[in-house]
Image (cartoon, rainbow, N blue to C red; front, side, top):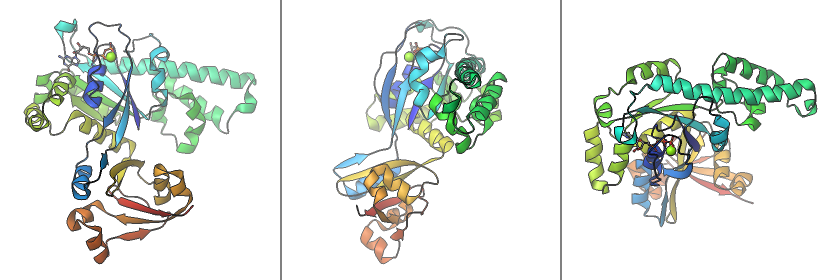
Length: 355
Ligand SMILES: Nc1nc2c(ncn2[C@@H]2O[C@H](COP(=O)(O)OP(=O)(O)OP(=O)(O)O)[C@@H](O)[C@H]2O)c(=O)[nH]1
Ligand SMILES: [Mg+2]
């Protein structure tokens, strides 16, 4: 999974990027700095911890999220110029400022709903330009031969939504209807998550400036919404592991920021994890809910999908209870499933294949 962090200048994108990835990238001290970063966030998962304890593998691999951090967008500033790398992201995370920081010359009162509207407006304008250009070409007939089935209809529907200042995703298109849009890497066609980056007291008291208004706004649009204190949480991440939990609890959060974001993103994007285990490696694999055993095997290697015979499946809960494959077998809890089996969150899978 790949996510793109977008937001107005100095909203704390790079600070949040550092919180997610531990990359320690330099943050901005004035508006107009144009730093982009790419990094990887490890998705904490207590189930992987448990399986790793149990199997003592040489290597433990958590699920990963690739994170893109781009410069701040400004109204009319041309999202296209900076946001390009985000075009192929699976989701967009909008970082909204909920703090003031006079030291960094950020003293204006936070206004997250207004900022969100501004970011959305910029992305909408950028998408609209792409669609209008394509429609023009199609209508001139120059490239009509290249039009995909249903392309013109879906482009028109998208254009109409954007003109009403609604993101393309609000159309609720089916995967088939969306297909012709794929090549354009539209921004507003992606799922959105909202992150309010607040000051310490805001996180503790649940009353960051603008939070109430933003909550209503996000709920009305069914947008997942997270509150973080990126700067402080990032500082907490620098502490020895045994000290972190206390500081987080003091802030009023139960999990690190990366875990909260991953939880929201997995739920919103309908993602689940399955696991492979062994003495060599315990590994989490990310798939969409509804993925079949055969498709899931293809995540690991195309040979496994091509030569798929059967999957041996154990549920995570059964593994926690029985703690060994031998006992699971004895109790009939090791299942053999065929190619159409729909993989469940937490399944421990072993694929039998033949190529
Ligand atoms: N007080 C406070 N300051 C923050 C917080 N998050 C970021 N900052 C500060 O705000 C300034 C900008 O942070 P960045 O993370 O660089 O913001 P950005 O959105 O990446 O900025 P651009 O990339 O230039 O658009 C830095 O001085 C940060 O230390 C926060 O949660 N609280
Ligand atoms: Mg930045």
